[in-house]
Length: 197
Image (cartoon, rainbow, N blue to C red):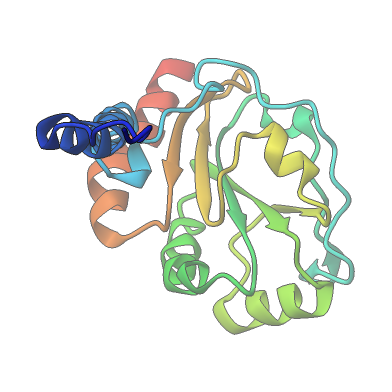
């Protein structure tokens, strides 16, 4: 008499093998819908409707505009102006693609454009701004990435719209493109401008 148990019936064995796959698929679908249907620019931000982080960042070393040192990030600078805060780095390929749009936007004096330079070498960051032009009235250096975590940044580039009260009203994940600039970002900035007047 053999002490081996008889093999499990085939349907039961198949079910045991397929069950983990079904569970994984269900979770993947749930995450897909919760994160905006796969559109990374729609990842929700817990900071929408909250004041900007009270983080001061030093200026980008050696960066000047018209012979004057460009200041770093000071949370008090957000009061009274609609601001666009762009988190960027010279090593970020999409940052190169969006740079001309930021430079163009800098000509619109209704808005203040602020940069957070993320984990970048100062020489590389200055070279980047020398190549495309500096759209920023302020550039804070986030050498270790801690301030970007406080801003809720997932990766670069990311852009925030801040109203005149210093409240974050919108977040764009990924690069600014002509399409999302025209249809989303500029309307959000103009809405913040109207709300603040």
